[in-house]
Image 1 (spheres, rainbow, N blue to C red):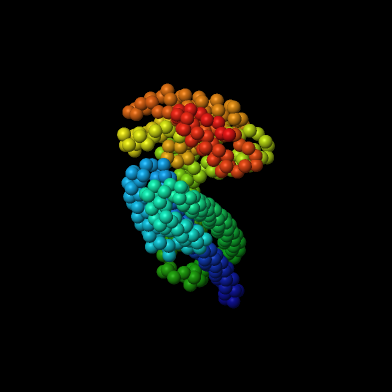
Image 2 (cartoon, rainbow, N blue to C red; image 1 turned 90 degrees about the horizontal axis):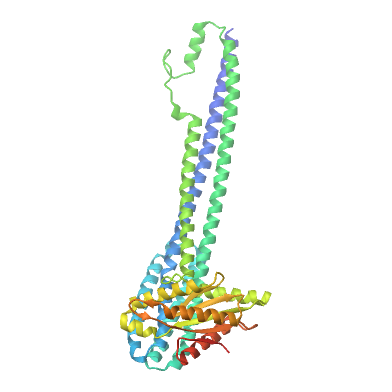
Amino acid sequence: MAATWKARLGSIRAHLALLVLSSVLGFCALWIQGQYALNALESSAHLMGEGKDIVAVILPPPLYLIESHLMAYQMLEAPVAERAGLANKLSSLKQRYQERNANWFDHREHLDVSVALSLLGTQKQQADAYWDLMAREFLPMALAGRDAEARLVFGKLNALYDAHRAGVDTTVKLAASWADARFDELHHTKQRTLSFLTLVAGACGVVALLLFVLVGKRIAKMLGAEPEQLHQEIVKLTPHEAGEPAPAQDHGSILNALRAAQESLQLHVTETERTNRELQTTLQELKHMVGTDLLTGLWSRRRLEDALASEVERHQRYGQPLSLMFMDIDFFKQVNDTYGHSVGDQVLVALAAQIQQTQRAADAIARWGGEEFVVVCPNTNLETASALAQRMRERVAKTEIVPVGLVTISVGVAEYRSPETWQNWLKRADEALYAAKGQGRNRVQVAA
């Protein structure tokens, strides 16, 4: 009888030990996988934060260079006597640019994105070459009134400026694709961890259920033994005093531990997804800033250049007519000199609104620089574009802008001629614009 009792007791102990062992192994496996997932999440969040820092660092210096480039262009159009003041402003912009780049240079070691660092270094070299050429050749020629030589040097400056801007756009696109890749990795980690968690929880549940059934059957068979003997054997299996039930400890159960781990993992996933959405929103805002003129809300020059290239390619494929207008505010310099640049900005905003009210749905309007605007007219021949330009000119001429009064514009119109480049097409419209100014202003001139 005693031998049989020991065999039964040993079998129950083995089942209980197997239950505990399987639970411990499952919890350990879950803990290891959870640590791996949390490390992956923390790494992704850290890298996304670095990506956001990269975007925040690379944008301000090019904005200073844009303003400087526009001011250099204005210097060529200004009288020689006024160029010294513009030169002083250029010097101030250069100082701000160098300070901003120095800030990036101090923090470059914290950015672990080799391609972005390479692009940033290239942009800095291009910008340094730009400022060196500006100080060494362009400013002395412009201040001395040697405009022909200064314009040749400005062409070199323009090439450096375009290369610098292209590098900034490439870095922004790199940061966007890099953030998408981090988000994909995060999503895969989340799915893998949740699948593993479900598998472990299911396995532990199945093992516990099977052992519960087996142990229950064996205990039922043991109930036929002497009560005192059964009581003594039960006392041997528990560390508590006989008759004192063990206190409930729900917090130590495997299912509760699994549930707590899952909730913690979901919390980290939610936080990281929120960070990724903020990064995506920031990138979209930066793309919008690059493609929009901050003063008028019209397209920026860079966005227009991309549109011109696309429209020329579409024309060469389908043969549909394509025209553009190059317009300039007459005597705008006198407005700035008389009323100040703040009023001049108001005139630019008001003029942009008047042009937008006249444009058609398919037309694209951009601020080219200073007081110059360009309107691209798809599926439009020269005659129709000229008529549209006349309506714009007449509308502007009839609109009074406080406190300046009436303001007029001169317009050059050109239809695209295949196979010329969009740069040559724009140049013909620019030449027509200057012909209109030479013939008295406030008129529309068709390009030859």
